[in-house]
Length: 148
Image (cartoon, rainbow, N blue to C red; front, side):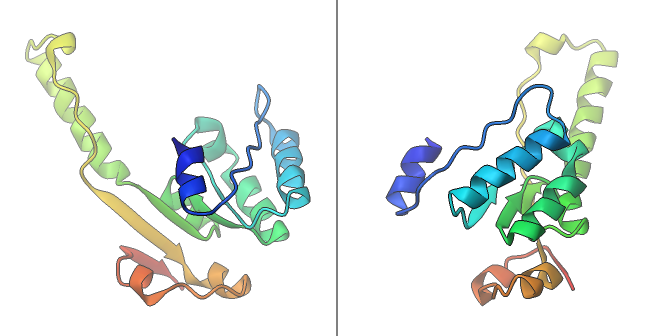
């Protein structure tokens, strides 16, 4: 699906697979590949290992001058460019509601699946400026938080 979307947008998708377990050398190798392939921007998926190594990822992105969209606001708070993600507090509240229903006797397998309904866009303007990027006004007005 992502490859088709990239093609429709006139973009080339470059995959930078990581080994297992994912440690700092794996990220360095992936960034080396992206630099060799002349990648201009990348998307970080919401894997636990990526959250754990978020400072390394953000630093490597800065060194390579790569724009990135991250899965959680904490990446942006660590200096990343932007994040579009679910609001973690909402997910915790939803989980607490599920737990309460289970304690009240509900069968977990019968509870409906709930998806996040609140998403947030966080943009780090300081990082954008350091990269020489101009964030379009149309994106700025949609941001839930701008870090300056």
